[in-house]
Length: 206
Image 1 (cartoon, rainbow, N blue to C red):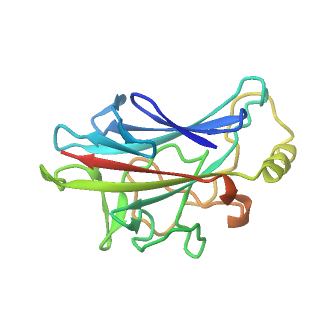
Image 2: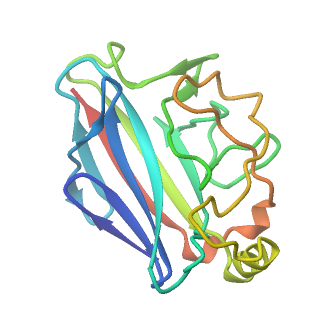
């Protein structure tokens, strides 16, 4: 897998089968992407010009010839903010399920903040003062190929667009999300391919 910086998105390419695209949108301008400026091969910066919260939006794109049924390859997203996990508020460098400390996309389509000191904090917003920054450590893991093949067979490759994995129940931890709830991973941690994981650092600043 490899990471590609684009003007307004990060793309994690998995072979030629699928790619996970991540981009930021302002809370009050949901269709306008915020530029990402690369500073090295695995680091970039996002400037927030005004005190507005951002949403991080993951989206999986499949090669047209790969999945004519519309089934998309899932990715796990382990996200830490200033060293602490966005869902548990504790340091975490590996995927965990007790409690779950990562997002799965699909079905996850939006992440609107991180859990810290017992509350849900936005990416940016009025709490991020000029001169301050938030460090986002993003680790992306694709689903193992044999697990995806099993998933696709189980879904019988139903024609038409749709999520690559069913939505689990809403997680009880990580804060009440206004944008979109966080869904339980219906699989196991071992379904995700650590050998193909890619990591990137994004710094949000005013």
